[in-house]
Image (cartoon, rainbow over all chains, first blue to last red; front, side):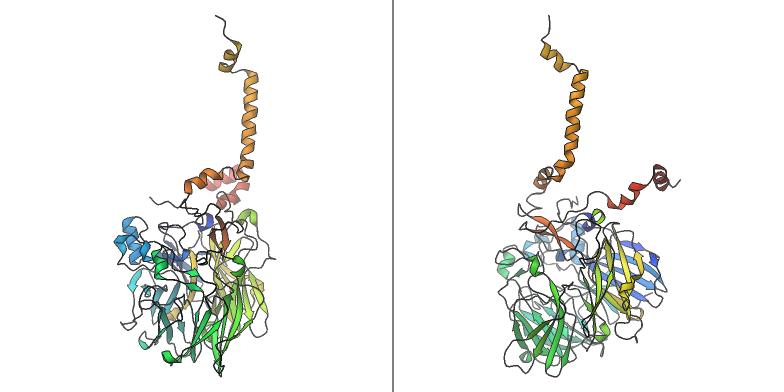
Amino acid sequence: MVDFSNQPTMKGFFAPTRFEADVYDCEVIGKIPTDMNGAFVRLGGDWFYPPKLPNDSPFNVDGYINMFRFKNGIVDYKGRWVKTPRFNADRAAHKQLFGLYRNPFTDDPSVHKLDRTVANTTPLAFAGKLFALKEDALPYEIDPNTLETVGPWNFHGKYRSLTFTAHPKVDPQTGEMICYGYEATGLETNDVFLYTIDKTGHVTRELRFKVPYISMVHDIGLTQKHVIIPVYGFVTSMERLKAGKVHWGWDSNAPAYVGVVPRDGEAKDIRWFKGPERATVHTLNARTEGDKVILEAPIFDSDPFPFFPPVDGTPWNPEKARAYIRRNTFDLNSKDDGFQEEKLFQMSVSDLGRVDDRYLSLPYRYAFTAFTDRDRPFDEARAGNLRGRVSNCYGRFDLATGKMNSYFAGDTHSLQEVCFVPRTKNSAEGEGYVIGVASNYAEMRSELIIADAQHLEDGDIARVILPFRATSQVHGRWVDEDQLPFV
Amino acid sequence: MKQPKQTRESSVLTRRGFVRGMAVAGAAIGFIPCARAMGLFEAPYAARNSPREVDSPSAVVSFHMDQPYLDASGSALPYNFPAGARSAAPAAAWSENVLRSSIYQL
């Protein structure tokens, strides 16, 4: 018997949806730009069976990949679970066999040799293939037309890390991918394997090194010359796992380290800089200017996630779980291990920010992310007591002028991660569309927003309406028509 | 044999007894929304779901990063899931004719 009634957070709009979907010729309010041809692919999760244990992390949710397919002004929608060995084992057993997030000691003994990943974090289109990524396993290849799962992929046997990041970086100049795995040689190891993979999907370079302590290395920064590796307060240990806890806890005494390594460097060339308590979960962009390496990112003051609480037993502090767009400058000529930090905007933002990917690793001007505008209306009678607590706006943050332009989604809406789509391959930076899925809490449905990135205040150009709640997204990516073998 | 008056009144429904009973029932029904607002109906629910649902007796569902989460300390601002089938809310204002036309496609 499937019973979600005792899951306190899985109710109302946040109840599991539990179905796969095909919607042809979706309802649209407004007009889809005819120059948008490709797909907006989203990856996130939907619990098929309830968590086995209380206090699990939502990051342990079954992966669910879905796609808004754009073609000549028409949009179709398709959603499928990622059929990992774990998902299939659960289905066969009619229950959740796997325990806490990245803790195999809490699993049913019958599944000890199975891949535990739920492949629920980031979609990736690379070398003509579509993948579902999660940082605890290899990528899972997905058929781009049916969204059915093909299986794990190790880049022709040359990718040796046991894990693969959810945030690989594709160099827009060369087309090569810089990617990595942490806990690369197994659970609770502090090995990181850093790879360069050419645009045909072949490994061309491997660098093995160790981080100062085992931590969540969720994202990196990429410049034309360097790779930047943030390591911050999440800690773990085999003892912790054997005690039956989720993989991560937060240690506010653990320094934030940032490694900087030349893209063609060796392990001995890594320089570790050290700073105060911070959490750089996601990055925006980075660049090298002379002897300075610059990283810009929405960075939290402290532990961002209530489900990975402090290890010292103190309560998780929501006041410190706010992200601000910051610039970290690492001087390669400096004599000490410190670095400079600037807060570029005084307002807190969603840390799920994006840039125009054609400018990744290069000088750029615009960043996009969601934020909460407390001055905007919120209809609590229809959408719940969430005034001031939902991301109701997308912002375009101009790093050259410090100005911000914003799009407001509506008084019963909450916005998921933003994505930027260039109007054409040759458009200027920031010329194109801001897209993302809005949760309409009043109507119990999801709406894909499409707005002109240069005129956000004008509202959306079009909304693609789904007559149901789309599964929650972690990350989404726009895929151009020519990136995958779409039919 | 003559029956004691008290016994006879308890077994026969009189008009006065009926009116008194209705008043008590009405008051009880009127109390339901107040009791719900005061959280008096929450105890059986919490008990049914404890300890699996609520790890700490003071835990509260709150909201962070556009998602609900369980705050073990109980100090966070609660998130109250809207009650009822919100998808039917627009139909509440419909007339009987419009509602029936919608349902039965008349």
